[in-house]
Length: 379
Image (cartoon, rainbow, N blue to C red):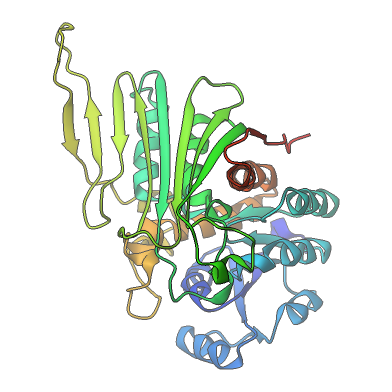
């Protein structure tokens, strides 16, 4: 029976944070079953028992060897993403992968090649493109409320001390997608060039794994068909600042700024209708982004607010249910695009366009801010 005629069978690989997605897939009306996979047998058994999921695999090899598996969602460490995604696609299975897509231009090209040869879907599961805040701003943008956009910025500030070893010394902008994706999705453009400076200095021991000396990187990007410049800052270590994945965008009629801390609400700025005068006062309004359960099937809509990860204190829930409600939206788009036989919203080229700027930015930082061009991955 063709994929379009039956429900999907999905394997979720990585049941640490990845366990967040298990009950969402399990409840989705277009999913026949979800299976779990993890190299840690204890974690695998615990996740299966918790969610009532009996089907499991001891690792990716076993998942790929099973012809009954239609699609694989990878929630695994960053250094594994590229090779694992390629293996999934080459095995003839659809692939969803947590961010980032890869950490080199060469690996991005390899994933694109594998996707095109396989004809299967590849979707990068970028949470920032489906948060409540983004969906609210997108509605304003599509209505033309912002007017002409003049500037945008993104930032991702997070202290990674105590996280798994592969994070130690990671180039900050290699994990940039949360900060730049919302802006690029709104403007519908790709990045062509970047200047970036590193800031601060990591201890020598922490530099060894990746050869990266910077705890913080700040970049300014030029877009393909837009006069708008985009600024992005990412910090990983040695920076005392509460966690924030944020973006702001400014037009000549409306502006939006992410909240300073996650417990607050964002700001909308608007221009008064009074005639121009020097020093005119710009209005500001604290807004609460609406929850968009209306965009989802009723079976998974409650997951925009429901925590399923341990006690709900994982950082994805600092912003509310599943990175500000994004998880069920991501699952729904991956499942429906596959069932409908269409490309997902964050397809392989879009994923490349959102990932490559961070790779290029780090190259620029290592060259003291020299301009680095970003390839066009659509050709």
